[in-house]
Image (tube, rainbow, N blue to C red; front, side, top):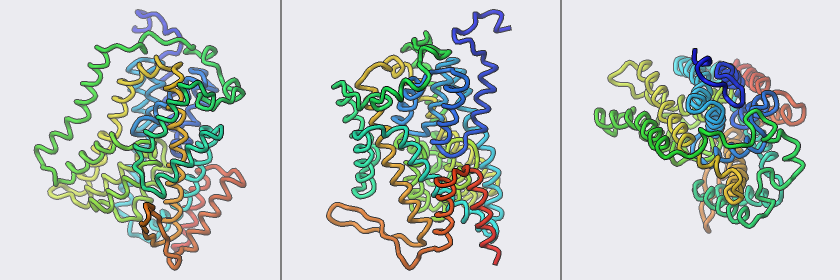
Length: 458
């Protein structure tokens, strides 16, 4: 047996136990990135004591820096730290698998019964709950990231930049990174992990007291040969299907469009699902016509009610796009293949980013300038998520939202006459349930969905 031939790992956690732990995390990972990160922190830091508080936050900040779902990348990072490459593959794959199966089943239901009044009512109620959940995500991420005035200022500036000035998200991240880099290099405690609040840092599990310890594992040291090899493998797995589709079907085919668009998204979208949703929605609705405007929120409702990364909503986008443009394939077969393709090109790059960059980031864990940049990026993401909460609120409560541009500003102006009183009432009730009475996310989703169905009965 392998365990008889090799010495035990220094941290003493067998791979078999890791399989059980990562599967448990995957099945409990509801509520978008904020909830998923909280689940990982509770199990890996507080319960299992695999890694310490600062190491967890350092890995999280690196995930925030990357395009794609930061929660899945955090899982890959920690899995890789604990059990090398196979640990990262295990953690990242299991993190996605339950959500993929669940959303695929819901997509079948939606495509078959989406025009039925009860189904429409169900998703009407879910949208109201989703708005409350996004607002809750702003608060939860903010409590973790905005620990001083400097971080609050960066978050506020990020919100103004994206909501009023329409500045691209990558530029916002770059600006925050530069500010954090300078602040960290200058030695300011405001830009340390934990925001300079020593009590917060000492209140968590110290890295030296964790099973992994504070030292750098041997496999985590930068190795150019390994980095080159893993990069070639990941790039081939990611881009070969894209190239084959373009060469055989042409650029106008729906499968080629799905492969190229979501491959581009995997490179240019930062901040996780909340931050990139408006970018995906705009392209899916306006450029490609895969979805109707309200269907994007229906898809997000699916992702909110199933485990796994919230960005898994793109699977629903690809499914519906191919279902409506399936020729010459059967619509159900085309939709299933498109869901697989979308998931593949969205999540395979995440393994590339972690396996390629994590050894270098882990080595620079004590670098004050880099830590400052990552801390500032996390604060900027809070402002971007707040922008998404406002965008959601406008589109859930009002049927029509217009745009006004002038003097360098961009404003979204709702048509007051299009106010949906039922949606407003449900959204307020969901917000009160979460913030005032502490009701769990799944209960709020279930109650709003039931209310939507009841409202649709007449």
